[in-house]
Image 1 (spheres, rainbow, N blue to C red):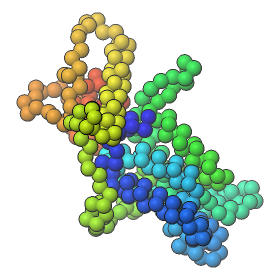
Image 2: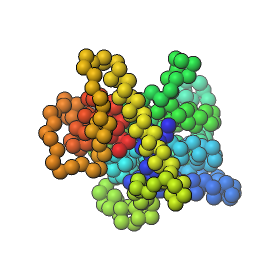
Image 3: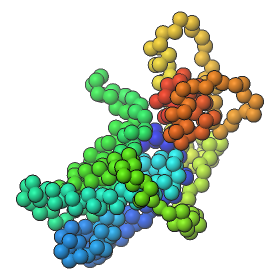
Image 4: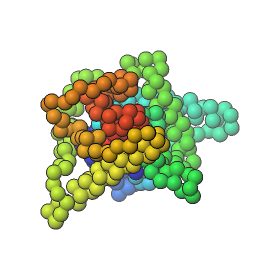
Length: 331
């Protein structure tokens, strides 16, 4: 289910790859060297009373719990689709903005909890948890929901179910993770909605992006996966898995199309030419017959897709906006 939002590994997602490698590497190092874990504890009282502001940086980056690191890594890997679609700088700006807003939210929520229940919150779980939870906001609003199967004939299992299950597992990892989750969701909603022009105030500058592109991106960039190697003894396991996932994505889209065709019950039945309806978006002919514009094209263009890709996806999905969006995210 993780692959339904993009099954091409970490291609065009250097920031996500860097976060996975660096943060998980530090978690493993701190597990082997427990005497240094105290430096990375996220203690609110030390920040307030002893003015240890550096704990905001160290305590809100590296997970001290291996289970938290594993769950957050799965979520970061799934949310890499936003970096691939909108660009590394915009994705980094979202993480930076929500990281700063959630830092303030942590203290406000801790004081509110102390005021309501007369219980002082001293320490919160360490790690990049609040920005990870904030990514659920664009995930819920932007990624289309595709039914995959049903449980007991009534409960739908979609392409997003496993992501929510992992988020729930991370939410229940410790007693005060819910506070970080609420802080992340609030900060993600505020930044995504551009409340008080937060996107213009909290962003990664162009010069920082250029430095990262020159110095860090060559270290964490991934090569484009090959789709031309046939399945066989000479193909690697990664290529085989990639091709199987691409085939599964196409089968799911075809199943959605067949279901839509059956529900419409058109009067004239005609044979479906799949090669015509689902051409590759990467191999288009130069001479193409003109297509009539669709009202949904403007919406897809506003989401960041090109006009040509939008027209192709709408034609492939019979003008179904949800299927077209999912088709573009997969290809």
